[in-house]
Image (cartoon, rainbow, N blue to C red; front, side, top):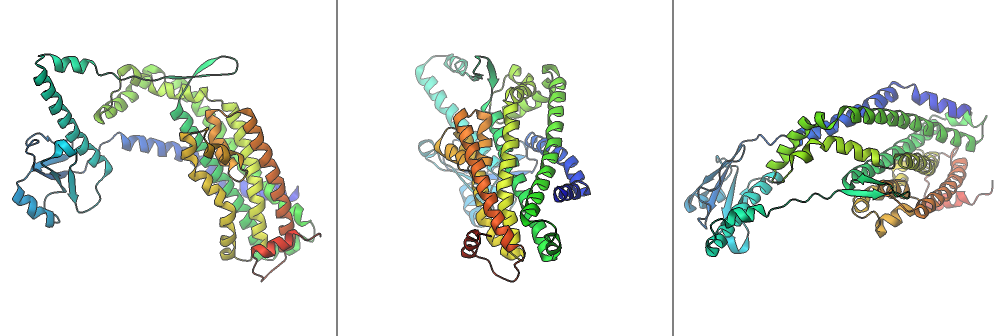
Amino acid sequence: MLILQQEYLKKVKKKSFIILTLLVPLLFVGMFALIIFLSMHDDKQERTIAVYDESTLFLGELEPEGTTQFHFIPKEKYDTLRTNLKGSEFYAILFIPENVYSNNTAQIISEKQLPIDLIERIARRLSRFIENDKRQKVIDEAGIPDLDERLAETRTTVRVNTLKVSETGEARKSSSEVAFIASYAMGFIIYFFVFMYGASVMRSVMEEKKNRIVEVIISSVKPFQLMTGKIIGTALVGLTQVGIWIVVGLILMVVGQSFFTPESAGEMSQSLMESSQQMGSTVSQDMANNQVADILELVGNLNLPLILFSFLFYFLAGYLMYSSLLGAVGAAVDNEEDSQQMVFPITFPLILAIMILFPIARNPEGPIAFWGSIIPFTSPVAMLARVPYGVPTWELLLSMALLILATVGAIWAAAKIYKTGLLMYGKKVNLKELIKWLRYKN
C-alpha cells in the first residue's frame, strides 16, 4: 500500500498530469471543431488549368469554379506545355481525348501530385456534362418536349433511418455512423492508455534499477509487492484521469442536448447543408435543421452503461496484462536500446488491434471482429470497438473470461521474471534466458 500510494501521489501531483487532464478534452473539442471548420471552407488557392480538348465537345463549357480557372489552348501550345509546364502560368494541363465519350477517360498533367478534391471536381464536371449531353440526345430522339422535366422529377433521394429494438421490445433510433465513431474512439483510447501507462511502469522500473535505488527498496519489500504496488498505483492514476474525462464528457453531452434544440441547430446545420450541396449531394432543409440535435440523441441512445462498464473492465484487465509484461521487461534489461527490442513483440498485438479497427467497423460480426475480440492480446481494443454495435452476451463473457485468464498468466510470468531480473546487471537477456527464469522454483 505504501508503494501504491507513493506511485499514485507522485504522478497525480505532477503539473503535467493536471495540465494534461484539463487540456485533453479541450484539445479534442478544438481538433474536431478545426476539422469541421476546415471541411466547410473551400480551398482558396488560385489555379489556372490549361485545357486541350481534342474532342472539341467541351469548348467554352468549363466555367470557372471557385478559385479554379480553365483556359482552353490549341494543340501547338499543348505540345509545348507538356515539356515546359514548369515556370508557365498554368497549374496543370487537362487533356480531353477525342474518344472521351466511348472510354470515359481524361488526363491531367502536372509537375506535382494534385489534390484529390481538385481531381474529383474536374471528373465530376466532365461526367455531368457528358451525362447531360447524352440525356439531351435521348430526349431529342424521343421527340417528347417536356421529357427533360419529367425525367428530372423522377430523381429521388431516399433517407434510411435505422431503429434498434432492445430485448424489452423498445425501439430506438440508431446510427451506424455514430456507432463507428464511438467504436473507433473507444478502441483508440484503450490502446493509448494501455500503452502509455504500461510504458510508464516499465520506465519507472528501469529508472530505479539504473540508479540502484531498487537495491534499497527490496531490502524492505518483496519484489512482487514492489511490482504490484507500481502497477496498481499507475492504474489508479489512469482511472482518475479517465474518470475526470468521463464526467466532463457527460456534462458536455447534457449541456449540448439542452442547448442544441432543433431551432438553435438550424443555423449551424444550414452551413453544413450548403457545403454538402456544393459537393453534389442533396440535403433537405428538414434534414439539416435537426442534424445536430439528432446526433446528440443518437449518442444518448447508445448503451452507455454497458460501454462505460466495458471500457473500465478492458482498460483494467488490458492494462494489468500489458503493464505486467512491460514491467518485467524493465526489470530484465539495463538500457533503453535493449528494452525497445523486447517491447515490440509484446505491444505488436495492440498495434494489430488498431489496424483491424476499420475492418471491425465495416463488419462487426465478421471473423476478423470475432477472433480479434476473443484473443486476449487484442480483445481490449477489438471487443470495445464492437460493443457500440451490440455484442452477443456469450461472446462478451467469453472474451472477458479469456482476458482474465491471460492477465493472471501474464502477472505470474512477469512476477517470475521481475524477481530474477531486478538485481541482474550487465547481462544480455534473450528469449531463451527468459524461459529459463520462468522455470525457476524460487
